Amino acid sequence: MNNFIYENKTKVYFGRGCVREFLTCLLKGYDTVMMAYGQGSVKRNGIYDEVLAILMKEGKNIVEFSDIMPNPTYDKVLEGKRLAREHRVQFILGIGGGSVMDCAKAVSLAAAFDGDAWENFWARRGIIDFKPIPVGVIPTTAGTGSECNGAAVITNKKRKVKTGYDYPKCNPGFALMDPAYTFSVPGKQMVSGAFDSLSHMMETYFSAPDEQNVSDEISEALMRSVIRNIRQAVKEPRDYTARSNLFWDSALSENRLIKLGKMCDFSCHLMEHQLGAYTDCSHGCGMAVLHPVYYRHIYRDGLTKFGRFATSVWGIRPEGKSREELAEAGISALAEFIREIGLPTSLRELGIKNEKQLKEIADSCSFSPGGYRKMTPEEILEIFKECF
Ligand code: NZQ
Ligand code: ZN
Image 1 (tube, helix red, strand yellow):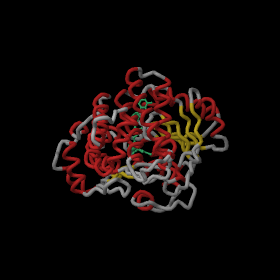
Image 2 (cartoon, rainbow, N blue to C red):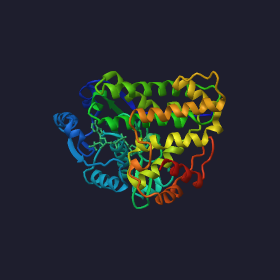
Image 3 (cartoon, helix red, strand yellow):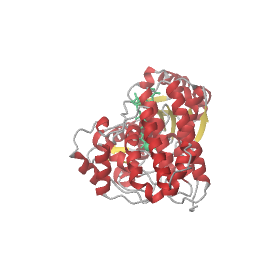
Image 4 (tube, helix red, strand yellow):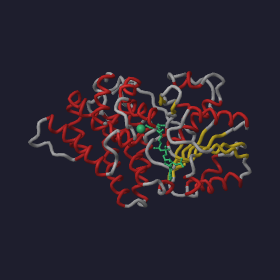
C-alpha cells in the first residue's frame, strides 16, 4: 500500500426524515443562508417547500441561488459569488444533484477569494489558506459522491475545459441523505448516476498497487452492491432499500476511502469531462460509453486484475479460460450490463454528430499518471473513434 493521509470532515446524517430532524440544529448561528438549487426538480418533488419551511420557521434571511444547470459553468459560479458577496451570505445550502452540490462548493470557495478563482483552483491545484464559506448539502441524486468530498467539477465554456480538484477544505460540513429524496429521479438519470458510482470504483480499482489490499476488497464489495441494486431499482424504482444502498455506495465511492493507498486511474473521467465540455453530455452516460472500450485497450497491462474483476465482481468461473479470455469475459460482462440497464453505448447517442470534432476533443484531454498505461492523444482519438 502507498502512504496516505485520510481526512473527511463531512458529517453524514442518513435516512428517512433526516432533513426535518437535523437541519434546524445544523444551521444554528447562521443568519443568512443561501439556498442553492437546480432547474426546478426540487420544486416539483416538494423538497424545496420542506427546506424553505424549516428556514422560514427559524427566521433565516434566505438568499435564493437557483437555476444551476447540469454540468455547471464557471459563469454560474461567478453569479453565485456576486450574490453571496452582495448579501453577505454566511452559509451555503446546496439542494440537488452533483451539479448543484459542486456549484455550491465552488461558490463557497470563489466568494471567499479575492483573486481569479479559476486560475488558482481549477486551472491547477491550488492551496486554500483561507476559510471558504461553510457549506452543507442535501443530495437528491445518488452517483457523484459530491456530498462527501471537496471536489467541484466546473465547465469553463470560454476555455472549453471541464475540471475540478478534490480540496478537503471544501468538503461540506454536513450531508443530509434521505434516500426517499431520490425516488423522483427519472429512470435514465438514476441508472446514469449509479453507473457513475460504479465508474469511480473501477477507476480506483484498476490502478497500482495490485497486491492484496483492503481498499480493493472494499471496492469489490461496493461494485457488487451497485450492480445488484441498480438491477433492483430498475425493477422496483421505489424500493427504499435499493435506493439506500445506491445512495451510500455513491458516497463511499468518492469519500476517499477506497482510494487510500491507491494510485487511482480516472482516465475515463478525464476523457469524459472533455466530451462534456464540448457537448454538455450526461456524465454517467459518457462513462458508460467509454469504459468498455477503454478497458479493451488497457487490459493486457493489468491482466491479473482484470481476471480478478471477472471472477470477484461478475462471478465468472475461470475454469477452461486463459488469463486473457477471463479478463475479456469480465469486460464483456460490463458491456452487457450497460446494455441491459439501457445506458448509451456510442458517442452519437450522447449527441456528438460530427466525427471530425473528435480530434480536437482528444487533443484537449489531460492524462492520468495512475492508469495501467499512460494514454497518448492518438490513443484517446482511437478510443473516441471506436466509441463513435
Ligand atoms: O436541475 P434540476 O431541476 O434539479 O434537475 C436535475 C438534472 O436535470 C435532475 N434531478 C436531480 N435530483 C432530482 C432530479 N430530478 C428529479 N428528482 C430528483 N430528486 O437530474 C438532472 C441531473 O442532475 P445533475 O446534478 O447534473 O446529475 P448528477 O448528480 O449526475 O451530477 C453530475 C455532475 O457532477 C459532476 C459531473 O461531472 C456533473 O457535472 N461530478 C462531480 C463529482 C464530484 N464532485 O466528486 C465526481 C463525478 O465524477 C462527476 O464528475
Ligand atoms: Zn464520475
